[in-house]
Image (tube, rainbow, N blue to C red; front, side, top):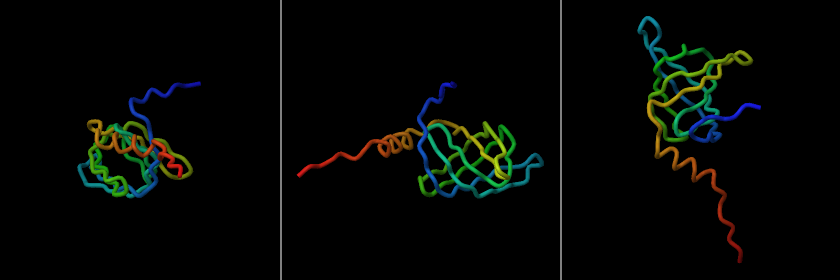
Amino acid sequence: MSRDLRRHPRTRSPGTIRLGWQDASGSPRFARGRCLDVSASGIRVEVPEPIPLHSCVFVSAENINLSVNASIRHVSRVDGKYLIGMEFSCPLKALADRLAQERQPEPVHRS
């Protein structure tokens, strides 16, 4: 069994994501995809086309109020789409705090 060595816990965060990067010739490229999960240090998305490893990407996800630069760390093809793991240029403390609050159960108030 493999251990999860991530520095920050992942949280499921379905929603639309927009990505922007430059291809090998320097031309701008854009993709719209689906956010799968997010942590304070990275995000995993599903997109219709591959993005080369180590590419610098601008990530925008309105549903989690995210606009950040990231680097492509993992790409795999699954059922005709691409699962891409990205690492943010620096961990996002505000996002980590918000995700931690969302993971905590609501207190039960008894009457």
